[in-house]
Image 1 (cartoon, rainbow, N blue to C red):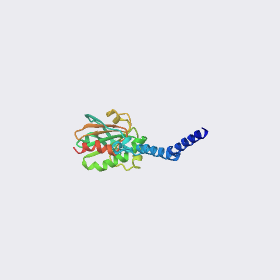
Image 2: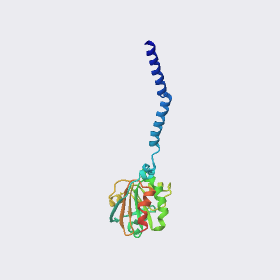
Image 3: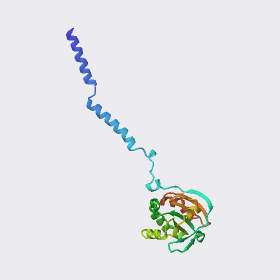
Image 4: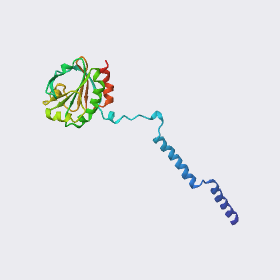
Length: 203
């Protein structure tokens, strides 16, 4: 009997050795499965892939469509000459309220200048109105930039009151008939200008 029991135990051990997969194979198999799952997250299918917005678009504001007559506004430019919005009737005018102490305002000046350069021959003008600073302050700063569009001085903040805007930067686009069509509060990107302002210029 003892020999029979011993023989049975040996057979069971031999059977386990034959049927149980090696530990190494189990580890490799689990590793392959984990890699496959990770690949689904790292390399999603094209159907689920979304294009991320460019940094400048992500942090730029979207204009609000509006419709009201442009306010009567008369100020002076850097040459201390009288200027009025009425003088630009027939052109598409973008009024940009800004200040030299405002970082977002200064950051968008090159963008505005580039857009102005691209469209100034199409009956388009940008008027940068500095809010509540002196001619000397503004003139000194503008000399350090590439800005070529008209700059007006607004020491008393008249433009902000005229457009009912009390934050900087802020921009307003006036069509050729003297009607305000777009209102912006916050930073502006070149792509947003092309998307929203260019159609008004091309009308």
